[in-house]
Picture: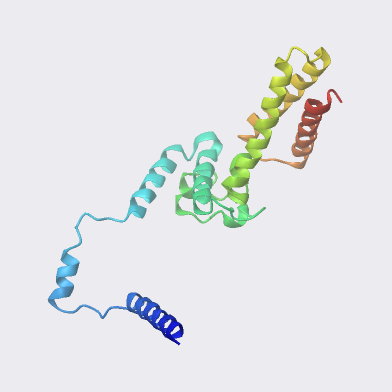
Length: 207
């Protein structure tokens, strides 16, 4: 009985503590309200306003760069910061991008419907999030580094080194081009085939 009483008393104290901390205080009236409002410093402006002004200045200066890619990239970075963990969803860039943005006046084609960021890395970050982008770059970097070590090895035959070098050149060219263009079926399929060939050649030798 004593243990039960102690448990009930402890539970009651916990409930009372939760209730007391979660209660809503009564509104302050009169001079107390004036004192509370006067206690706020006059120069305490929201950080969101400063961030919006900074983005607007950046877009006004670089929005027209790269045939309008500056505006799209800056807005895409904002979209990534809003949903950096899981992204906005696969193939949802056209839905998530605000084509009625007032700052679109800095974009050369104001009436153009923007549905792609013209950057494969930004597209992955917006759709799937930063962890997906890190996994994508990490996997490709791991394959390229391992292949470079295979080329630098003295025991590797010349044919294997030539194959690795050719595949690395093609993959690096694709990655550079993907910084300015969107991925398509015509380019992505050979990219993953060459990447698979590179991994196979690294493990088993020339294919």
